Length: 128
Image (cartoon, rainbow, N blue to C red; front, side, top):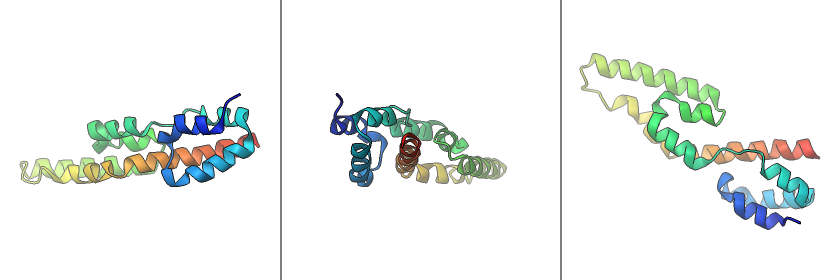
């Protein structure tokens, strides 16, 4: 028999810390077997998303990866427009295209955890 606390400890990196008491309560109500099913549902790893943000964040790949398609498209369009402006100014404004990707590095892990939390709630409703 699997303990809900052990499941949470093994998967706590995927969810926001402030939501853990609520997650624990909902999983306890489900029971250990269903809780195990819910937590093995393939959540996005915030560290992988951060690495994607560092490497190809300007192209919005990090946002596409977590399922935030509209933000990914917007980020890609803004990056391409500002990159074009930087090229047309002969590199004088070289830093402009990287402003949003750098700022987004501070928020992408929290956004990933919140998306995982929303997916968890959907999975719990599906099993009830």
